[in-house]
Image 1 (cartoon, one colour):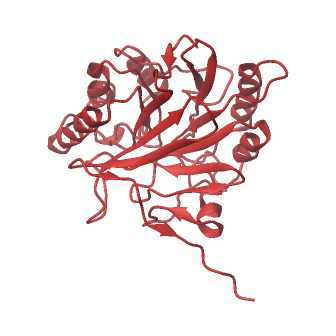
Image 2 (cartoon, rainbow, N blue to C red):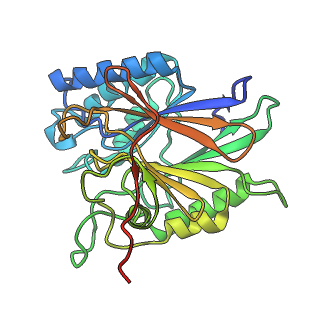
Length: 311
């Protein structure tokens, strides 16, 4: 909790979300990714950088631990604090999430941590942001959404486990002053929750969905836990490289980042970039936009309206 993150004097706090770098060995496409990150950080000047998984493509790395250090070096050298969660491609094969986290923690400016040993995954932790007066004003939660289902009878991607949800409930309660309203918060993970499908299907959304939403087959109840805990304003994921939409479901904004890395699939005309989140110290709101490669700010995305059901 000794993150020393604080709102600016004007009452704002800015986060840049990079996702799906898929870094491999510092190759040509990786260097393009680095230049994109450098430009975004120069233009946005954030207070915190967050990597939401698939930082490296471990199966393509000669040394995944050296590659992940290369991948986050732009953040480490920027002087801006940063945090990260893992995705499904970070630790494929015999690559250890524990060793990857040890590598990240050893880099300058890293606020990530492995989290409790008793909780499933590596990288379940929380950070807080203080107000100008030094009082705790906001929380940021980071969750390891896993990689692939460990049950043969259930194909597809992993899900946030019950003990992680219990940890979130306990942490959210602990961070709220006794008898006070829940601390407002944002939540970051890699693989989208099943509710991302529901919000696209049933609510107006801002942005694009160019591929299927690759969420787990099982709904383990993380969204319900956030809704019950109160205070959660929004969630941010990656994973699906050509989706960047956001929509609000039961008061929580479900948001994709913008895929950052050039060393993976994309779509013609759908430029790489980063999502930017600007929080307000007062009130329960935040603004978000996308900063594209080349510098363009995308702040008025296309509005998607769900199809009306036939009577």
